[in-house]
Every structure is written in structure tokens, then in C-alpha cells.
View 1 (cartoon, rainbow, N blue to C red):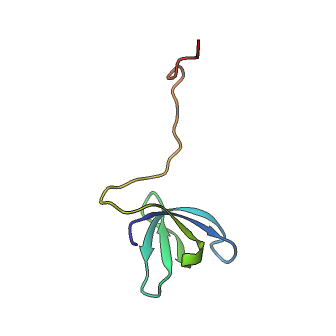
View 2: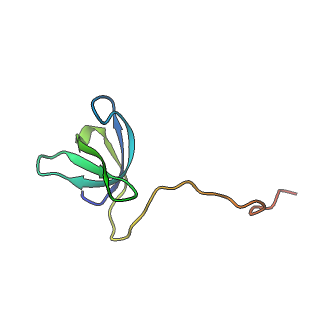
Length: 77
């Protein structure tokens, strides 16, 4: 469904690779994947290559790497 966060593993073609982002459904039944900035990063991807990570619930989410500050987690005693 449009707005879901997905992971697409595309084995061949112009968009070969692994893609993470928000999905948009096309009239043809294929999907477009939009990145963090809202631009399309992969177009016309088949449902066979898409795995839903999180369903659209009205909020906006992004996949980012967490950065821990030095000393944020105390060492074990």
C-alpha cells in the first residue's frame, strides 16, 4: 500500500540491488520506491521483490544509522 516502508531486493535490471524506502503503488501494479529526500530511487519494481518493513500509519519514519555518543552507555562492572 502507498506509504508503507519497504525493503526491495531486485536481482536484475536497471535497479539491481537492495533498496529501502517508502513505496508508491502504480496503476500497472508495480511499485516505485522513494528515498529519505522524497525522490524516486527505484521505479516499476514488481511485488515479488518487495518486503514490507512497516505499514503506513499516518506518521513519517526513516531508516538511519544510530550514532552513539562517547560514554553514552556506561561499561559493565
